[in-house]
Image (cartoon, rainbow, N blue to C red; front, top):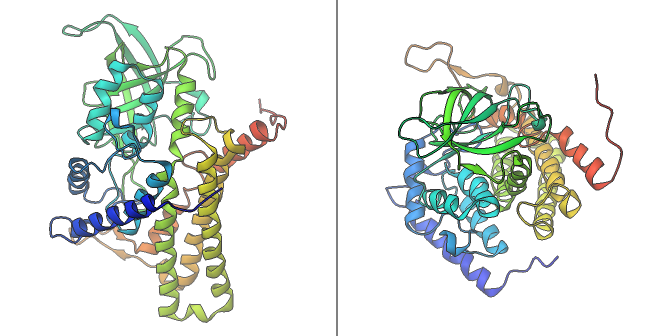
Length: 413
């Protein structure tokens, strides 16, 4: 694997670094630096949306998409550079990730020309935001257990044809509280089980029959939601791929999930690690050889994780099966999730007793509210890293069964 950057790549890095530096030093955007992100997605949504649209106006959204679909057509390494420089600039976290990184590439791979023409331009322009309707109360890591149902019926008055009628419940639905659309895995063939009979539907959220209930997290935000569908409708032609064959589309989307933007998390992680080291120096815990060794180990591990992520990107094309590249996507998910949890634990070790204390009351009459510092939030949110996006257990099963060829573990009765 050649990790050397060409002269063109070096020039591109300088271009995006200069542009972001200029924009984020202006009075319009400087106050947004660092906002959003894991455990903080509730922060300044409207302001971050305006920033995302500013990026779009200057051609800095969907940078890896082909030019015919409104992107810049950047090479893999240039995409890595863009996302790394974006993270290094401490730019506000985006609000368009699910559309740009997941649904858009899925539409290019599986959608019709009409679906692409309808939905890709608003994603590029950040005019429509998307939520992910996968998990259910009884179908989290075991996505094949989906029970949400959809059936084709004659369209309502004013509809252009038949419509899918959706009934069921989704949970941990990211960004549903401020999105206009959700992509939904639903069972469309009565009597079907497991992977068969599922369809990948695009459903508008702003309609009767859809109820969104935010889920308050330990970190204080409500990034996730419960979504209830009771006779919700969407046009018959808003199914991606063939009806009943949605499992392949759903898995293709997950293949796009662990791309270059996920690799750029390592830049944010390096910033978090540096802040923990700084706190250790400030409170004297750095003098404890056990603490110092733990922090040094985390720094070395993070360098290895970045190299492993780059190797994985060079071996796997977006949308490929989880076993591609020797299970590179699953390996990367396992290593960064475990590392980030250990960082959260180290942050609490460094904080000592201060890590147990929070400031209560919000100053507006709610005595139960509490305010977390950055390391408390890091610790609490990182507990979920080994669950969301495919739990550690699921990733290990993928590697065991699809890469190593080991027998499936027995299913309980």
